[in-house]
Amino acid sequence: MSNRRKFIQRVTAGLALTTLLPFGRKAEAKGIQIKGTLVHHVFFWLKDPNNPEVRRKFEKALDELLKVETIKLSHVGVPASTEEREVVDHTYTYSVMTFFDSKEGQDIYQVHPIHLKFVEENSHLWSKVIVYDSVDLV
Image (cartoon, rainbow, N blue to C red; front, side, top):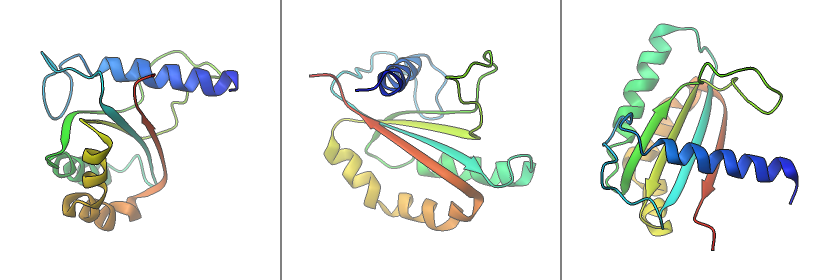
């Protein structure tokens, strides 16, 4: 495995730990166990990221998306004001991290009417999406 891939996996795992702080749009993490969960981390690049109306619409849509029952914990964020380094990507507009109890929960989410509606009604707003799904090390 390349060093870059290992780094990305470690960063994703580190970001997952940040959800233990009570900064989510869905629930506080107090007492929530994340071991054994499936982490679904999505990065969005909006076509018009500087348009306040587009951002309001997208954030409202994200609030609706997070109502899918199989999502156990979530975090919505924007790029942090961390130092510029070759390995840090600040180019995305929004980051959405969701935790599911199992792959089955994430499978339900993928075909859930709320998720399908989110994609159908908002895909015209983004130019790029990248998804990282991860589970615990064996």
